[in-house]
Length: 476
Image (cartoon, rainbow, N blue to C red; front, side, top):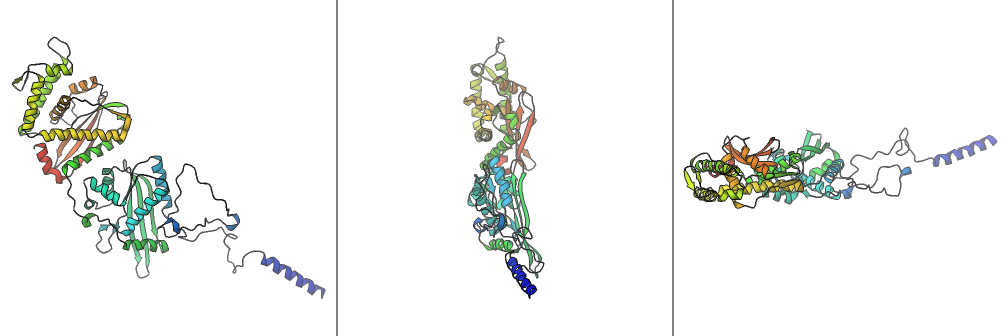
């Protein structure tokens, strides 16, 4: 009887102990936080469309959860809880370290009916949420949506010119972006009957100057997140690209000016070390003409340049004249015609130039070189010093020299010109020319170090649609 009573007490004690030992489990079933670490269920971070849908559970076991919030990191961007979180964080770190405009293009997709490349509501949604997350991370200079459309139109191009993924590279360069974010979002169907489908997203950020990949997100999404995102493909978007876009008619003048700005950006990036701290002369663009009246004017300009240089270097008594004295010296004979002074000869040239209808060419060449200089100054700031001359006569003389040099070899720079510029304190000479290639033209810019003679060349092809206008402009 005693043994039975002891046995009963023992059983009561074990039952009480068992009731305090933890949650009940099924046979062989582990308990989260006890037998195994906490493992959050897939896609517990919500739909990805808004950070408000993110679960506040940080995934730590109940026994070690702290009610004290973690301190915010100092001098670091906010960590994104978006499904693109790691991608957002990498872009934010790069942009905060080296700031610049970020162009966010909507993701492209294959139309399920026509198989054409297009932009749907999902592509727009990815761009918008990426922009929002970057702004929350403290990144500025973000260009997306209607602002990006306006910037593209302002660069003399319409959305009808955006037809493929690779077009993003040159579009981003034209609008002056430092970074570009773009990619694709397509539905992948493995077994339609079994509803085995996934949403494949490829999202990328590049640095425009050298096309370095800053961050990449590539994943096949399934389940709730895929379904949540796919519904955006049925929503409206203002983006119409390629064949679906309204036709745009670009202008030649705008194209040439944008080309000079882009060339300035390239030169500043590629040759910053050569230009930094140097006095740089930017010559007017040489717009070549090789027949008719322009050829005659070009020959006259070359003869004038030779006579002017000779008079500047050596006067009759062996002394050296300064430039102002040369203008008033004379008489001078240019191509069999005598003029009282060099200034009178230049006046005659101006009349010939205007009579030949070349005034627009001369004006355009100066305007374009000014834009190139302004682009360089904008990129390099006080690291570059542009040599300027307020003399209208000197600017016209530079146009004459450029026209005369246009018929020479691409890498030819007159030694007299180099000596003259070096005497004035210039250390780098930047020349540009509009040259025919096949059925179109290209703008070629040559950067010459006047102390070492080394040369670097950058060029910008002009599309064939402008060939007829350029043909008339160049007088060919």
